Image (cartoon, rainbow over the protein chains, first blue to last red):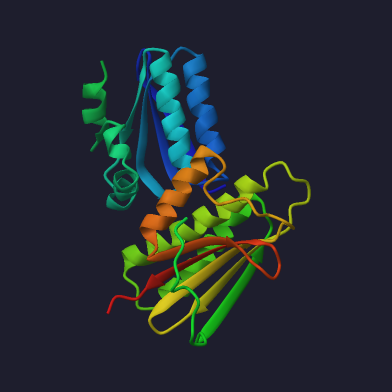
Length: 114
Length: 144
C-alpha cells in the first residue's frame, strides 16, 4: 500500500496524524478510520501532517472535510500541516484554504491548538 | 461538466495509448502512472503533468463512485490521444447503460468534477451515442 499513517499524541487530547505517500480512493479509507478511531477515543484535537503526502485527490479531501466536521461536532478541531506547494495548490483551487487552518510545521500547529 | 464544442479532433492523433483497468480502487494508481508516462513525453511543465495526472485519477474515481456496489463491474478504459499541440484523454465507463451524469453522485466526486474542470482546458461528460457508455473527455493544450 502506498500510504503510511503514523500517529503521535504529543499532549492529552491532541494527536498528530502524519501521512506519507498517496492519499487516494484506495488509501483514504485508512485515514478516515484513523481519524474516527481518535475521535472515538476522545482525542478531538487532530493535526494532520501532509508534509510527506505526494498525491492527494478528492476522496482524501473528502476524508479531511469529514474529519473536521466530526471533530467540531465534539468541540474539537482538525488542522493541517502542509508546506508542499503542489498539495497547497489543491486546497487553494478547491477553496478549502478558507475552511482549514493550515500551518507550515508541527510546532506552529501545536502552538495554535487550544 | 461543461459542454465544449471543440473536443472532436479534426486531425488524427500522432499516437494513441489505451489502457483498461479493473474498476477497483487499487488500480486507479496504475492509470495515474500510465498517464504520467504519456504526459511526460510531451512538452508539458511538471505542474501541467501533475494536473493531468490528478484529473485522470479523478475521472477514474468518478467511474468507481458511479459503479459502487455493482458486482463484477466492467473495466474502466482510458484512451490517450497525443496530438502535437494537446493531449486528449477519454475515460470510459463500460458499465452498460451507465448514463449517470458525472458530478451528480457523491460529494467527493462533485469535488472531483470541480478539480477536473479547473485542471484541464476542456472537459465534456456525455453518453457515447454508439455504445451508450458514459465518457469523460478532457483536453490539455501544450503551452505555445
